[in-house]
Length: 163
Image (cartoon, rainbow, N blue to C red):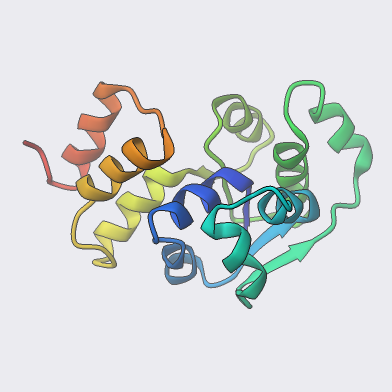
């Protein structure tokens, strides 16, 4: 399975000590060079900046189609543009991306996408985590992850954790 990731899912999952879920669910994750640079930027004090360069299952790969990257950069940032382009180039099975506009453009490009919420749902369904709610609450409280209340409740309902 070929899985490409953007920056924010790696940041969010590492912030709540759940980055290993990506490895458990997908084996290897491929990130474009700009995503690696965003994660390991000298000013980044997040856990992901320290851990990502040490993980053998996160591979960095440059994109070839700079024309597409530049077209996507009209609406998206560099990391999102390269992640979508790399996923297209590799004919990836999945693109991990959270940003709304990036998800929309990825879908329009024919890519299958998943975000942090989908990863937490999949992890619960595969018994990799005991419950989603505490992790979701940590995302909101510790990282500023934004989620509408309706979607929050829907996620908990999907995994059988309704209040």
